[in-house]
Image 1: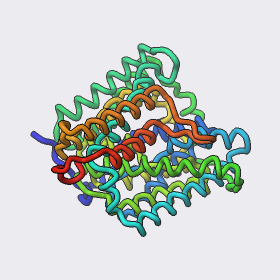
Image 2 (image 1 turned 180 degrees about the vertical axis):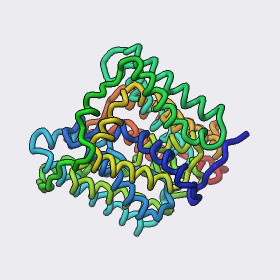
Image 3 (image 1 turned 90 degrees about the horizontal axis):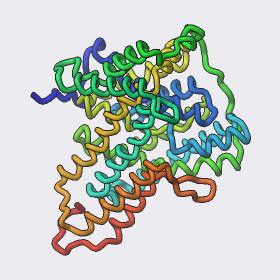
Length: 418
């Protein structure tokens, strides 16, 4: 029996929406906290800003697009460089300008229209890029699950990761009703219990944390050198954002191309707010798309609850934040294996449902080039260095695919853009 789909505009009872929202917050938590740790920024502010950014996104898109905003990995290198050389305040100023870049791009797309999107981003390309996003993240998930944050295989952590993964799959596959809609949350809970029994959880930071408190706020400083280093990365994230938006549309069965200006503007406002408050730049999150894929719950209502949880925990309740941070890396890795795999599967589904014809040479060339370049770069950790900027595999493969799609010859009998 197929799992019941809860649509974007549908509502669920509060008692059901609360754990669904908590599940989305848990899905984004590990990655959102990792970015400030790597860049030298405040993890509490990153969590709080993810909640604020998601609220702004939902407001701008009028609750029509189910997406969650979290810390962007694309900015790690430049932001870390600015923090190390000039301080957090200078990075904050650069992030504010980055948010403005998003808003400018959104304005340009609004004026130019969105008809060009289907021309440069046909299903054969979008499906391939979606697969790159999912499979490219697999190296991160595998590293988390196998190494538990270290450099070598941690077999206790691997056991906890396997239990987490299998539990989430079991709850999704063998149960019905409400239980089937929160398999990720239940998988994390069971995996956490196993990790505790194995001695993988350190409760001391939880005991030391205060129940009520505020993060340390700073004022941004606007420095031209820092802005030049950070802000242009927004153009790379725009490509990622478009890919994510098309993934969400594929998952929920809606065409969001006409709402791209609003979606980018929501991302821009989230990043702008993060810059003023001290959080990293924002982006839509693949982890939360994976949650929607497995649960079939698409209502934006639960994203409001997820954002509220993040705002509350990151901004006002240090003890809850410490409790969630005590979840071992291996447990989050176990559930990430499922979530990232579902993203890749959605890319494959797009190729199938759009009946992409692989007897056509141009389709084979586009898919082959995008997959190998994108997955190869993402899984090996390679980036294209352009001056002070780093172009990740996902963005590089998307640009390559766009170029190939525009220059490769089409059959005279070819219909549409597939």
